[in-house]
Image (tube, rainbow, N blue to C red; front, side, top):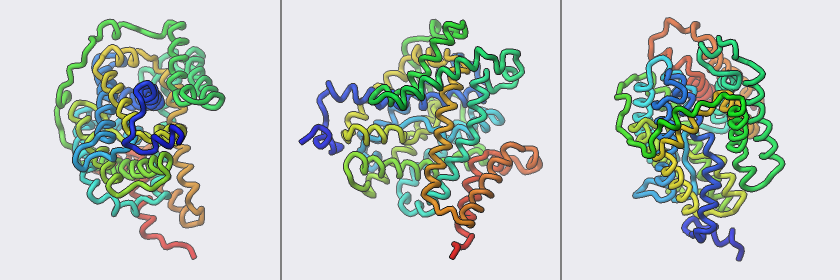
Length: 437
């Protein structure tokens, strides 16, 4: 019996000498994607780049990704799939939360996360009955819209920043900025496609390190925040207070539903890749409960919504090691990182063009994942019309928000969020338009 056959059971535990490196590999594969949403939303909220508030959000991203991972792998009661599912801060929420944070404040955005997390948790009881609303056509559309919405943000970051004063600066779009960003892209692609194992799985993280070192040589890095940061995080509940806004809650909840469906897919993909079977109803429900609880708890302490990370499903498939205890070790590593502010300060000192190079790849992959899901769809006239109208409504209103400037605040928030209109129009048209014969 081979090692991978031995560890095809989620409850089997490899020796620590194997389990710790395997757990670290899971962390490396998702680390950059996990902290990036917090950096972007913090920027949209107007927090100083590299400042203590941004560092705190980064710490919460790491800490509660680890906590949510333990909800999945260890679990309690009905919570947790007890599968090797790595949780992390979700890119799916970035567009909506950045818009809410920019217009209404981070307190409204995080409050919406808490409420949406509770609703997401409740979906665990009925998730099997909702999957029909999100066939590959609708889910693929939503993921594609998320990627297309975020790509311009990536380009702005690579050029020097997305804030107005950054885009008006003389250095915006300079050769120095683009050389740093493109270094990240090139190193990431070379490692991803010309190496194997841990190097390939951590390609984006290593690319970011390479860009960071080049930026350091250019004098673009300021270590002031690192020296001022402490060695232990003092977390506080509701650091920005609590403020309810119906439009914000609806927008974040809609993405939570999509996130729940993605988690169902990741749970199924994990069991198929690691154990050659379908996920059970109990595993799917447990994964959804953990998703929602992780999001709600993170929101209470200033963290963004959590979801399962698909790249870690790929690691399970590649290694054949299904042990949930390996991913538990990864979760513990994230918690340790989240409790050390200096780690967050080092990440926050990363110049925006470095981050931009990384997110060009990551956001492009989000869009590509949506396109990949749409390849499962029969591209007849009906489905092409649904895709066309949904994307036109979602992205069009987002690009020209003045077109709906007279709508009430709640509806305007939804109409200009890009993702919510795409999802709503896609669901409705898929339900009402007859199939072609």
